[in-house]
Length: 394
Image (cartoon, rainbow, N blue to C red; front, side, top):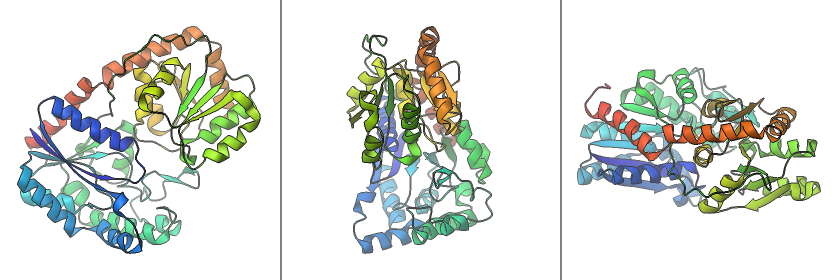
């Protein structure tokens, strides 16, 4: 099978780009012809370029022509869209429809239901636009990049394509990363029969024999931004002096603020900055648990899959996709979202229950081997491709 992948890369590279690359490699490893057509938001330099992009985000005839030519040159059996926003636009679906090529779309976020793509505003969950009645709240609050004008563009794009029935009429199948995400998109009007749940995957790391009990520590890995909830984690350390040391891996807009807020904690909180993948995996293999305190719904964080691959239990809030991925009392623990005291209590409990922690570790690794390996994921992906290719989804 020949697959044409379409992807609009963001300026801030994240897990989505890693998923696209890994999936491309996975398909190639199984003998498929794969071509990636990728555009980048790095090209949006200057007011004129951004103004043109704003218009194109609603419907780009240029991108439609680009995809049409790519289809003629590559002759794919199927087109897999990872992200069309903003430069490619939903016009790419029309190019595929005209050429008679079936389309699969991975939903890496909640863009089809929320202009900000996160259901998140003013540092808390927001579903004001989920009822399908109007996207005006997103314009009122300037949800997209803090701009009412830019939010109006995204709202216009979503409204137009709801009216054109683009989402249910021009996409043969969607891939949601969790059942939670699927449920939210059904609420937003996407046909549930078209949505298949398939998680992300990671390649298994080379595991080292690491003793975690000699110098136990908890680990945070992620962007230092408000939505990642790292402030809640630091507050837990400020509240409870008994917690084992915390190693913080990552960078972001809250870097200096968090370092300043943690200054009085001394070596109990260590900021390690950005680390390469090998270093992160070594830290995971030596950690007592990963703390993933995000305060938005999330899609499917690769960090959690990587932790499971290392046999590392994960502590998450009982929220969104995270609560689905981490089975409490099996592969980790849940705490009440935003509750600093409850988070500290869960970490203290883990510290006092080493035997249970070991059981969680084994279950986490088993969960990885069952659901999140390349082999397992390939079977799920091809089942979706085959249904679409053979017309099982109309």
